[in-house]
Length: 408
Image (cartoon, rainbow, N blue to C red):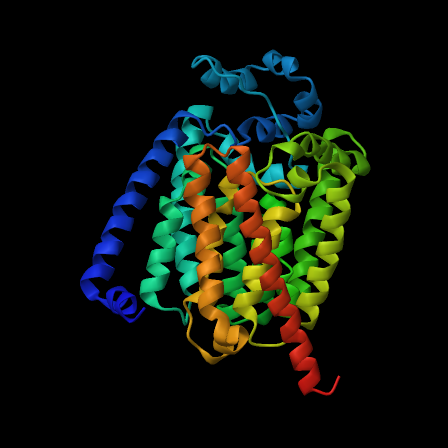
């Protein structure tokens, strides 16, 4: 054991490991970028363009043959049919979210695809920078570099980039909201509140990830930011209903119906394991429990709480494995040596660190090796759920420990 620790601390070994990871990360980003230029099928340019044209994207999602009637939309699908691929509209976002993509629909589909790739690369750099200045501000620099390079080298990030997904976009704005809340960069407190609320508002584009993460603002007692970010979507949803000539209830329910058709296509989320109504009930109960934990969590648990929220957010609702690149954003407790994190893990930090990396390696690399077959998913799921429950237990134990100290 002593020799292994000595090897791990050897500067030559450390730099060699970083160099290997950097090469793997560069190859991964390059391949992801190539795929993005060729495909980016999840951009939802078509759904956003339909909404901008005052067409109902949810009706078109259920009747894809009608999209050929509109020249602008037909040009989007031609990019795929020319390559022998099928592509149809899947408007699984609320209209207030699709409206965020209006600026990119000004461009032709081919140009929009290039712009979206560039933006996603910028979002990636922004996420890494914001993480270093928030949850990883006291983390070991070497450990942080390893975590970020492994993220870039992993299959989830490469696929996220290649299919033109929106998690990078949403997670960047969520981290920007966290940074604003933490640093309060504006002189005016009102300006700080509005800026953080706006960033949260944008981050909900991938609400299946960022809505659970937004509970972090409950922990920080930033209720105004949460209320404003949600309220703005309510107002914009109402405006979208008027724009489409539909009822408010319709524009709320229609995207959920489209999204429900994808429920069985996730990775290791509750919908895949339990299916149907059972998964919805479990997700609701877990969401309530997370809310209570965030409200009652004592100070000093910021990093472990963020880890728990990320772990649960990826299994509460439908997620393909390309969203799991955010696991690297959750490892701050394992590479931070300040007092709070030491106390949280007590003498078992090494065990939890090892479990975290086992889960991450399985998700980032092992699933790809086995083409996400059933056996690899089951093995990954066992590790993932066991680790998630263990972290939740640590958070609950922390609440009880603090309550006992305070005589509750």
